Length: 167
Image 1 (tube, rainbow, N blue to C red):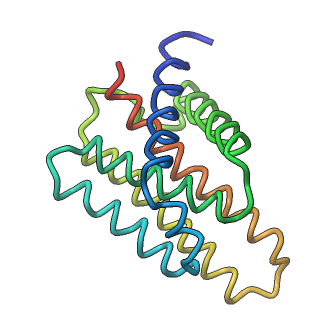
Image 2: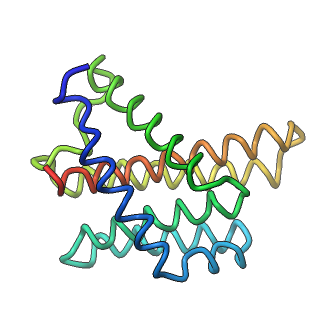
């Protein structure tokens, strides 16, 4: 795979920033104490901050930390979360290489408003899975797995955006 598509050092730097921030912040305690609706409100508020602050990297980092902490609150270990995010980043790169995505969130030249659109769409899919948990007669286990997958996608989009600051 070409270096233009796969930038592992930038991804690892972004993941290191997330884990360092989680060691200092109260995100884990918040995620552990909130129900899904409150967690959704919390991460949505963080996404909204990105549009209203000048230090967008800080806002994106907060979103990534929220998603990571939420995943931890679902009894997923940090090593597993990192592996899932790395797998999702690889999938995103492959979709771009196959021309199924029109731009890369990890590109430093793509406007932040386009990146925000992708992030908002992923958070909307988390909301949909929460609705499915409440309303569905289908397997709750499958829906929980879908919720986890959507949260990984939120985290991966945030990591991709953070990567753009590392290139």
